[in-house]
Length: 262
Image (cartoon, rainbow, N blue to C red):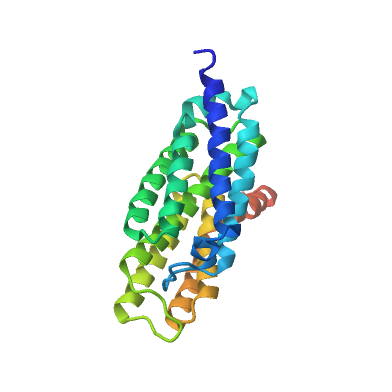
């Protein structure tokens, strides 16, 4: 059992580079036109290409995670809170990318749901049972899984629409049922962002991922109903994201400086 934590950590390193290599290959390889980061399988809820820059931030933070995991302060969280799930998540996510690029949209939807369930388990486990003990825990463990959890949810929605709704065409307007479904999808994303703030102990990072995605949907969609709906939901999301910070830094300081009455 002495070597068990080391085995997990080495496996995490290999899994990280597997996922990173798959994403780099999808962007720079010969099949880059089939990459999800090149607007493959466009839908009426697909965001502009800028949304996918979030992947770069997630990969950077996970790069820090695979280094930080070798410090003693991270060992308990990595071996007991995350365990083998990071390896599993990376492999499932890599499989999803391959299925998406090869147009297996229904199968890719099933796989991304499995990936999301794994990410959700780690997300809830880390946030509720392994609280951050310092800035390094917050930056290299909690932050990447918060971003990843929100981002996987976005991918689930995109894959859902790609698999089961009409494909977006430049000269074709979305059907009424498509507009309704997109509106419901946007509402679901915005509600999730609110839940990050209200119910998940002020998860600012996850909420910002949703806000950025909604804004890039506004930028990426030409239909006025869809784009303006996305913008309105973006404003609501940003408002809820900033509300805890305003309460913490403005109202608390205001109460401290207010004169005592009576």
